[in-house]
Image (cartoon, helix red, strand yellow):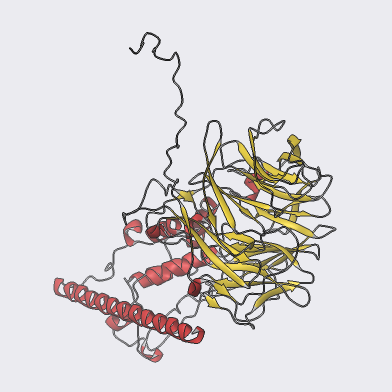
Length: 609
């Protein structure tokens, strides 16, 4: 007979040792088909432990092997297949390029560091390069030995960090081309550096086997501890705003390992685990939206991925992606460039070690539904700074600006950049762009009559392409003709009472005793907008458009018409006819553009076939 007297309920609840529940437990890697890879790229053979690759939603940049000097190749992401031997490169460095990084707030600006002890910034036009690019935007000189690493600030605009073999980290304000801080606490070569979520702290690993947490503004070392004991390269990445860090390195017995640390205590890791006994350096990549860490080894074909949790053991192994071809390095695309329709949560660009091939690898969450998956796509970092360089240097901190991915489109930036050599500064000409957008969105009433049949005209505002949109709208050209023409003809020729004339009033300088004198000082309005809202985008454009809407200024469309009711109705009918005509023109233009784009794609396929 079974004795149940000792079958008592346990005093405390026991944890179930089974499989932990996770929405990312079944994530898998999907390599791109051969037609969607990038072939015939002479990837650099430099032995430096760098990624040699940088990706954003527009371009793929990779350091290439050249006969002399240093060059890197920039390819539009949609230009897949076999690349030409004569493809245009960025070739402005005198020695080999060691690192490249895209500006997180401008998809057309890339920074490069080189063995020639310089850091250079380049502007890549939309559509890629059509000829060799040798003219840089600005050159940053401050290091005395070759420059190893680059890192952009995650929230402050125009802040760039560079680390060199002189054991110094320089903090640059690239808008002015000057050093704003210098960190001199390292005693040996710097292996890696990583910002926390808001950019207030900087973590570094060094050849002296120390892990440091530094305040980049005061250059004070806040925490220091012993990192991995092996002699090979170690890497560090901040785990977002969790207050923890992940490092990869080697043990004394040359086993590859990773460790989790608290930023408040670097005396010992919260968790450390050996991975294998391979010799390749481990590169960690962190995705804050999914709280997943990807660890890829140089020289092998394995990518392991883990999930970060807020309780011991702090990190949980999920799975691994294995391929037969060894990898030399990886580039990663920002989350705003992922394909939400395929449930893609991360994308690598694998640089093959034995072939001249770059292969995209998508990390996908298997879902049957084709609808947008809110649980795996929280709001992600937007390509807009939350602070200016001056605000960050003054001590302010700002969290990243977030954006939704529900629209399913890949968000790219379009910010033309100008360089002022006399002031040695780089700036984004946004004010002029918003003026152009507003002008193009207005309805116009063209006058096709000869000049000698008009009474008084003023030319349309000429768009200015000088640096920072210098004002050229104060030129006044008045053409006087025969005053004997009818008053109705004169009124029509002046376009009085139309939105086009209202825009002309706001863009041109005041003329005393003239009916075209503006009622609002437009330049003061623009200056006020751009002082309070320096970031250009849809919000600013909406504000500008609303300011020039007639309802906001009490300007009525036909305030110059005082005729009979039939005249007013006739004018309204004419305006409606013109609007319909313009709509038809826009539709025809869009169809023509689509047809030309399709023909261009077909020609590209035929050329690469």
